[in-house]
Length: 268
Image (cartoon, rainbow, N blue to C red):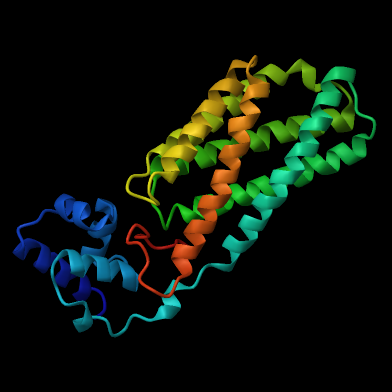
């Protein structure tokens, strides 16, 4: 069954059951916008999304199963690259922090060129990792997290540009603006944490734990005086992001019916 017949069928079954779109959402863990787009024929849902909908409506899945193939469940290749970028960023960040401390304490670094390369590498890998999460949001919808990810990406563009300009020109040292930089990143991490807290019924309570770590780290970093202590929850938060990306990739690509939370289409 193809669109628009599929959408009409789902709409008819839902109305026959006396369900609103909001009530159907509660039964199959999708979101209202996804159901609206499917029923209107705007998108062709993936096989596991259709299966979740028909099961929620007590309709025999086998009758519409033809036409949906396992090929639809292939994991986009770029997600593997963004995960690898996240791993590289995780380790590069330790070198960056050490060099930043040296820059603040001494007003310069021993090898500015090496520091500049580390800065560029850290920015590029983290930007790729954030991009991966922005695309993953299409599979596990969360508007708050999406906005937080774009905010974090914007903050990184601004502050890494400032750092690199300072290293190249020598016109200022990080100490001149370090507290402002910390405060903005603290807010961004707290915002990201709130985004993960918004996930419900997804991978047990892991997103809530990750979100709480992000909020705690963000508050400590924002305060300035709690930066050192903030590194502990921040490290755990970043490990949690990597772990959740692995989980998401696994659920997108597995051959058995995935969790119906992966409900919307990946936008090209």
